[in-house]
Image 1 (cartoon, rainbow, N blue to C red):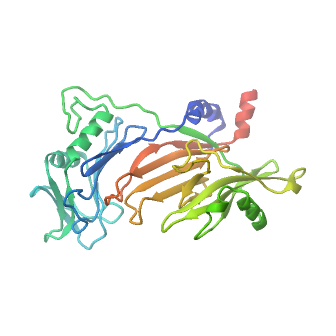
Image 2: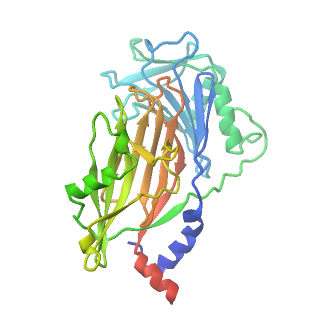
Image 3: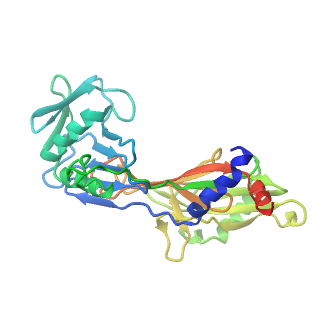
Length: 366
């Protein structure tokens, strides 16, 4: 918990953030590349399986070019492919060697930064085909560069680099002024730890009266998680199964409350969970739906991961933090093209600070 002296400042700094509706960035497709930026101006361009004459035969993962918009100006090039026993790579563009180095363990076997990344980006924007191979010529992945120049030019425009010395494509002589977009910071009021959740019979009653009742087919799994206690009131998150498919399982979120004493005999009461920006599924009069949802009880973060197809190379994902009243979007990513890009693009970021709402109320009175 932050020091008490900083408490009032935290709430003042987050007042505007908590009242604003998140506006995730949009994705743009240029031939065989897709590009997008988050609310802080940080951008990513990702390669796709070629639309014309392409196949998955020589494809084992995309290349991602990311660049931050702030003063640190971090440019990174990452290549994603399945693990291999090969320990070094060669990267060529149209047959010309542009980079070489070790293959490491982890999510990104190849990561290029700094001046080396600038050299590779320069070759990418001018080239037609990029190939990554092992020391003996083993193919690791082949990538079409059609549209890469337009994607990098889009990053220049979104980060206000066009016409500056730092631009990747739209170069000029002006100095670059780093973007100063502030990441929203949310104050979250999370209660004391509790293990209390609704009984099975109360969950059945909730389901029978929910909008999901007619959509429950296939696999159904209703889940309840404790959300804490305060002053004799207990809270719980209930995820009601609301339909399923081959690889997507939908849930509607409800917040349950139970009060000890006077109202305790009435059992749990439930209300649909509120979101500052509802998940993209559902609607048309029904509740917003989380897909393949998961819950982090420690930080009270609710996640949704909707795949556009079984390969998982397209779809959307969101992460929300419970602020004591509603779920606030802290991260969103998506991929609008189902063409082999397992690396989705981040379109929204926010941070949060854990605080005690009772202290905020006391500060307001004083």
